[in-house]
Image 1 (cartoon, rainbow, N blue to C red):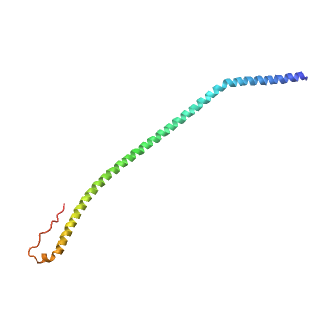
Image 2: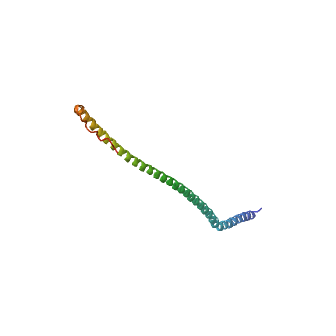
Image 3: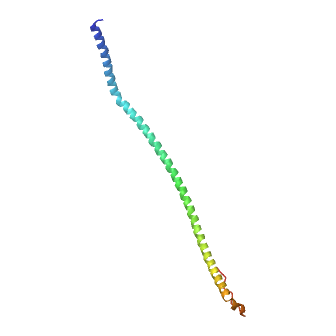
Length: 136
């Protein structure tokens, strides 16, 4: 083979490769925006699905918190009712304690009077009247 034939073959091969590369580049340039758009659509769909799942999870969590809040409010109302009952009971007990203190004070005063004036009561023909011991 002659030099000219070899150069012609090399130039032909390079021309085919260069032409193929050029046409391949042009085809890629045409398809690239379509492929990018398709990839963007797939990514957007994935993002939408993720957003929906996040929103669903947030809604479920919110509903759970609402139920917990309702239970806490019911427990608080129940405790408030018990507290009101205890306050009433304490007021009643305070009244009873006041009456018992008054009774102890009257009894103590009567006992002290009996101790101090025992010699007069003992020798007297007419004993003193009975002290008031009825408490309401």
